[in-house]
Image 1 (tube, rainbow, N blue to C red):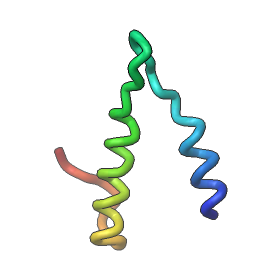
Image 2: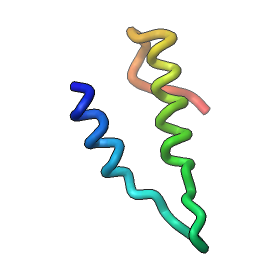
Image 3: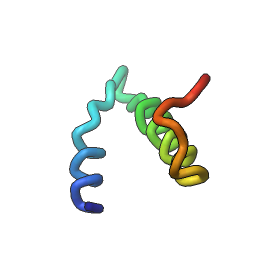
Length: 48
């Protein structure tokens, strides 16, 4: 399971502009993971 998650993370397309990696996708993913770690049985949605 862990190796599958790593493979999926590596497939995330990071937009690069002027040589700078825009990591907003990783930041959003980590925020969502944090929410589910705090309350794993939560409803499958989140609010802004």
